[in-house]
Image 1 (cartoon, protein in one colour):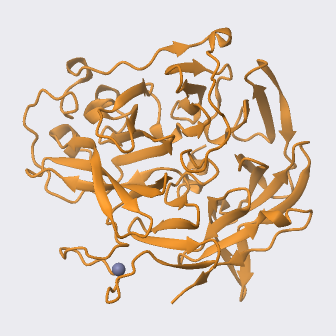
Image 2 (image 1 turned 90 degrees about the vertical axis):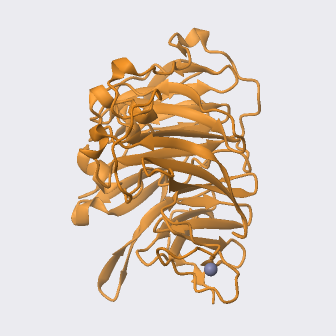
Image 3 (image 1 turned 180 degrees about the vertical axis):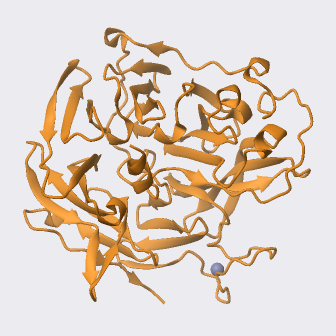
Length: 438
Ligand SMILES: [Zn+2]
């Protein structure tokens, strides 16, 4: 399990934020978020009610079809640095530089149109470039705007503040929407803190940001919820309302493994233990009650939702994928993936039309992937891969996922490649390259 986590490290929706400022002792405070307090001294929020009996699930009445402008782009890789707009794709390179890829011209360029700008980040200097977002965490699209998180510090240097920013699609305007999380340093935290202690995972769905973070707790049970860590919240993406607690992550859980997915009126998530096995839940956003799907102890990384059916693995090392039909309360085998020589079967992906089974070669830490394209009848109709052989050098491309037309990859230099899914017709698909404009 662990090696899979590492393997998909660049894909995981975890954002690592370095701690750069002075860490001073936190004064005593009555805020429940202060890191020094033991759990018995902090007041935890209550999560929403959970319905365990499927017969008591409340039906939804709203349109469940995918709405481009408002819905979670579940088909994109959940590293969150890539978002789709109506005319372009947007990519946050190195958590810093915003690029735009034009769908029609297939050209890409940095998202700054200032004529004399060098588009370079220089520490300590005022940022005037439209495309520079220092230490940004992720990128989501909602209703003709982009959103990202930027880190700021309290005036006294005793806390890190993660702020939500709204950015116009030309990059020219950016406005702070709210402070999403304020996390205090303390002895308890500073003794343990390193570059990997503050991580946040989030999605946008129907105008809400669903998010969970972990600040300096190291998963230790007595500080697990401190600083508001390990609690799933949501907040209106354009409002300044207070965060709403959806649920608390169980004590031995990892927020990296919740795998949030917004589909129709639901937000799915996994309550997984630290081995990556867990139970599936969904928030019904119409009733605002949580529904426990009766598939338990599944491989958290390996689930997809296709309509009202969940597809998942029961073991990480299995080739077999099962499906559970939520409305009928039935489970059966979905597909036994072909274990081609040397390939290890990883996980399924879904773009709203086809299912893709990702497989990996054991070389180079399982970074060479092949994708089986599975049609509605469970038949493999095409394959494509994430590597190319140029001048004898194997080049591996990281996966960004894609909509029903394209599947995207990036190389280490930030160049965008894709396969055209309209050619999914038996043949092995070719990797094509976007062009960089001047
Ligand atoms: Zn610039």
